[in-house]
Image 1: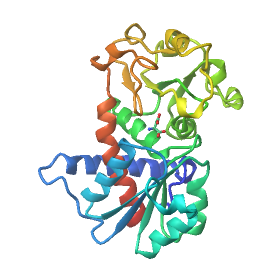
Image 2: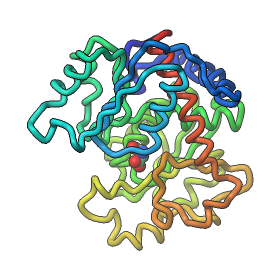
Image 3: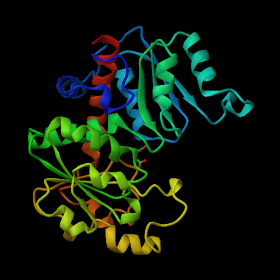
Image 4: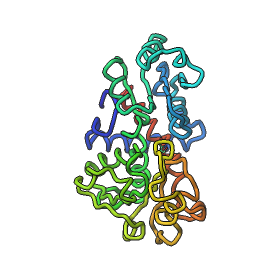
Length: 299
Ligand code: ASP
């Protein structure tokens, strides 16, 4: 297995497949009464979160605990960062306590790459600014694989804030490896200009992007990374780019990496639709993160 998971490019197709297969095994474990597979007993995993998180942080913590590892939880708030300690010093001090792997979320692009250069233990990227969120793309595609029984030949429409979403870039890198066709949909102001050259079709209308797609991945509007609304107003964005019940057809799968801003990128009526697989993604996220921790620490 690989040494770090800094981004999707760290993985070959066969490693990606191994992760999906390991996740299948861990999902079975999660469905048993004990829910534990103590393969990482004696290991300590540090979660370094410099940006907020609910699902990623908790599911990494749960994944580590289900595997029998100890977890050290670091949050920027209340730490010595406010006294001027750097990211690297923080990580080196935590390492000195006896840590076997780091899971890192940070607002800076490339922070997982930077830490991996300086730390002698595996580093897993849990989101680096607007760059990548590889474990999210793996769990989204794992959700599709569980639902459809395959990935090859499926079409996934990714709709929303392509410019600021780290989830989108990880999908862009993952899809060609696993044979998934992507369609990308956003207002022109939220499409990174070079993406017009990548080869995936880009749409500016939700209805056309979703027509005939097997699944939709709707992205949160990253308001914290934007100065102005992408169209003239947020209301206008919701009017033209919100995914609404009429956009979905029977059999299509609806995903979102969370947190969802209901009423912005997704119509609230979609909470109840049978297409909604958002909570499946959350459960599968634990299994995928167990697979990643196991592969990096024992694989
Ligand atoms: N939770 C995902 C992330 O951290 C998606 C989002 O925040 O919109 O990138």
